[in-house]
Amino acid sequence: MGAAVEVRGARKRFGLVQALDGVDLRIDEGEFFALLGPNGAGKTTLISALGGLVRADAGELRIMGHDVVADPLQARRSVGIVPQEIVFDPFFTVRETLELQSGYFGLRRNGAWIDELLARLDLAGKARANMRSLSGGMKRRVMVAQALVHRPPVIVLDEPTAGVDVELRQALWEFVRELNAAGHTIVLTTHYLEEAQNLCSRIAMMKGGRVVALDTTRRLLDSFSERLLRVKLARGEVPAGLLPGNGPDTAGWHRIPVQNAAHVEEALGALRAAGLTVTHVEVAEPELEEVFVKIMAREPRAGAAP
Amino acid sequence: MSPGFRTLLFKEVLRFWKVAFQTIAAPVLTTVLYLVVFSHALAGRVEAYPGVSYVQFLLVGLVMMAMLQNAFANSSSSIIQSKVTGNIVFILLAPMTHRDLFAAYLLASVVRAVAVGAGVLACVALFIPLPLPHPGWLLAFTAVGAGLLGVMGILAGIGSDKFDQLAAFQNFTVTPLTFLAGVFYSVATLPPAWQVFSYLNPFFYAVDGFRFAFFGQSDVSPWRSLAIATAALGALSFTALRLLARGTKLRH
Image 1 (cartoon, rainbow over the protein chains, first blue to last red):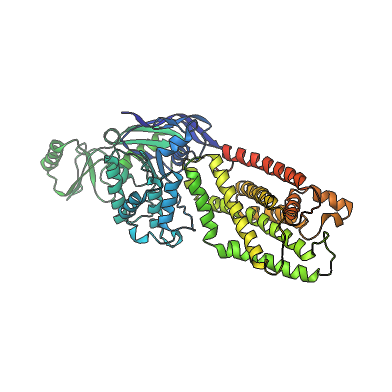
Image 2: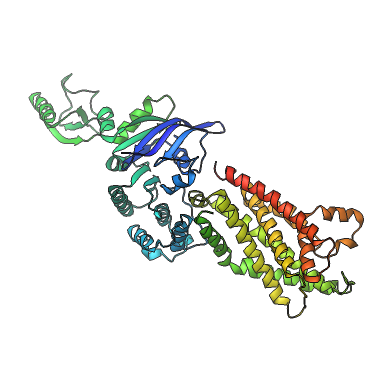
């Protein structure tokens, strides 16, 4: 499998800020990949450098094997980027916007694909509307369509679901999943970590312009998060050493790490044997949010919220 | 040229055409008003050239002035608007070269200039007869004059980050240079010091050469005007192409 995105030693400084501090990253063709990190971690700078909107001070960036500096036109043909900021040209309608964008890529008869994009992104009814008249969520969907007019092999979505309501978010992810199944490589950044956990097979976490964690979603969850059995007890008196940790949390939950169903049985059995009555029980699956918080905390520079 | 060039040119023309009331009709009206007011106020003036009335002389100068100003307005406003609103990213993300961008913005400026110039002439042609002994010079100076200001608009659009910076450039560079380009008077009638100042102004050569096309007479030779205006166009184009190739103030 070839590399869809290859970044080696990418560095970029804006004034006093080292936005990219030696980024190395390889994303294979066909991957569904998440790029996570706090605000200011360098995600958008990296994406902009891949699109040629930002010029890296050092390092090498390739898309589908095309160097973004030496062979910019082929690199740009190979990638569709949905920028994070909502931007639009107020002179044009939705359909004109997509036809013009197709033309920039030399695609003169792209009507069928534009129709499909409009339908899939629930914009068909707005095709003749001026961009100014659309809501924020609709504008963002037009931007998704703009990034896809040339059917790029690599699709980069920089926080595509910010400000988009739940129903449309689901529809967008369904569409993106289909594109991925059809062979498109997907790279996304998002602050909704559960989206990344559900969608992406591999995750890079950035902080301070560096990649601080890079692994499959499964392994990150296994290494940094655990399945927890959470119980509430009828009486507060718990024999010392029976349960790990420092007693219940403020809501009265005791947290017991477990690997599988046998551990759950065992733990509940031990509580029963100690004469305790369990009133509430639930099993919490590992969460990417916990992984994120732990990884950001172990890195030297102070992190912000995800 | 990349295939995208044609679309970008089309988009740039469509952009001003969609608001033609502001971008063509308004400057045509302004120019016709200048003509009416000044020709009435200065009707007593002697012929600027033998056989050329002041109104004819003024009309041709005003047509070129309108073309210069609108060529500048087109490229500069398009670039600054797309920079300020941010939608320029979709042009920068497309597979187009710096030459494509340069040529599309420049040609769209020339198209708008021609539309405004032709609009003014169409409004007054019935009332003010104009000879046109040298149509070739008309085309040459239209292209070079509008091109020169189209490129200045590209440079101003790239250089400005805010609308008021662009307005300052326009008010302190483009407007004075167009008003002092011999639109309202023959430079030959000026005191020597002012004449020197006019000869340093590249816009003057566009106006003067444009008049030669209509009257076969001008303050300086049309060849000399063409050479100087073309040299200015070449120098500014070279600068604009370099900035676009480097991505100055566009690709960070």
